[in-house]
Image (cartoon, rainbow, N blue to C red):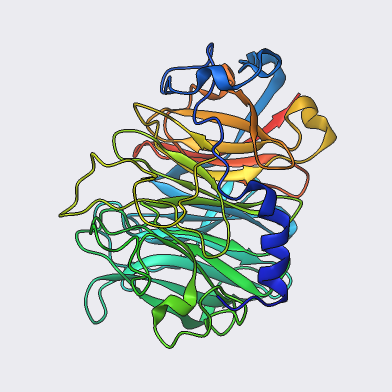
Length: 395
């Protein structure tokens, strides 16, 4: 590893947390889907709570969607939304939706793979999207566009990153995040259901990657930046299927990933860290999500669902005094669990509480959650029929 200023700052901020095993599950009293192994690990003062419906205001701000994968705010009250299977980017405002781009000729759709995550830079009117591609063989790639001043048309497409592995479309990832502290674009990828991908540093599957948002080149202070092989893009490895990325106010980076039949995970990302998924020989999903029998140091999850999974997906840090005791928590959407979790971590990344509001468990599968500028949460449902974008705020 070549330590430079960015990597050094990240490592310094996370040193206290590296290698520390934390409570893997929520404590007693939480909803179904939470494992039992470490329920006693949280002190009684931090037991999970369930918020009543009177605390929440939920508005539908876009409807008539099908498998919306991501939503991001844009200027003038606009919301930019992707739909996985339709391969359509839409702009929603004042309850109306219009198509910004039909990408059906560009995007390869199969299983879990299609038009997936978004990143939006409002100042430069730039949009990035992660999507399947059949050009030169099936794979996943990241493309970048410029948007006109009225947010009516995409143009000037460039490929930022390509050849992320894919097979049938299973475990395609793929979450994007613009790093607030640098010019980096983070890309969370899936392992494509190939057992050797997660810990093979020269495979881009089962990783969190870090590239320059405009050029697509690996960031100069990446952990393996001196390599001449694809590992120069890698920030972390040993992941199964990264579905969420979020940056805390302190600059730390966090991921959310799907477990097998157990142990969905929320992870604190340590540059160069191995997160322990190694389903070999073949694709053996009975192995632990974080296998501590592997050589070296494996980073333990900061939260884990236990058995069974709830299929955690997008995540965003909650901000704003209006949220009360939920201010500063990590909001995590769940697909199979059809709920939202609010996870509180202390300054060292240790889990201290889990909140599962009953009022947010009535919309079906929840895919993405994004914090709007005013602190409201933008959430996509993923039920396949009658899907919508919700705007959630405390009363």
